[in-house]
Structures are given as C-alpha cells and as structure tokens.
Image (cartoon, rainbow, N blue to C red; front, side, top):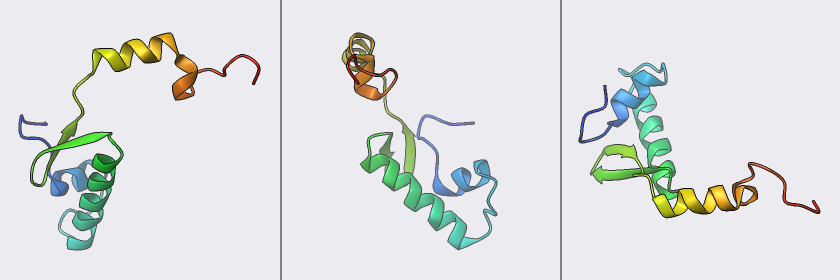
Length: 78
C-alpha cells in the first residue's frame, strides 16, 4: 500500500518482482524512479519517496481538446 509519503526504492523493487535484498536491484529501482521524476511521470515529495504527479485539470482539458498532441489519435492529414 502506498502511504502519503510515497513509495521508496526498496518497495518499488518488490512491486517489480525484483529481489529487494539485492542492493543492485534496489539501486536500479531508485535510478528508474529518479528518471521518471526527470520525465515528469512521478514526483519526489521527500528525498527517496516517490509518488504520482497530481492531476492537472488544465492538462486534461488540453489533451481532451487536442488528443493527437499525446499520440492518442493521428492528426488530420497524417
């Protein structure tokens, strides 16, 4: 279960089915989580604690208005 503080790298490794006793697997999970933060998919609310980005109503409206912008459908003429 995800608490208010977010998900840690060790728990992420468990969720992925990796051996959480292996330091290299936990560090691999941490690197992937940090990469997802850099790409805007996750937020790091506290050091080492990761969670989903809060929903942005303006972004949802944009994607509903222009679904081709995120690749949901092809723009006319493509």
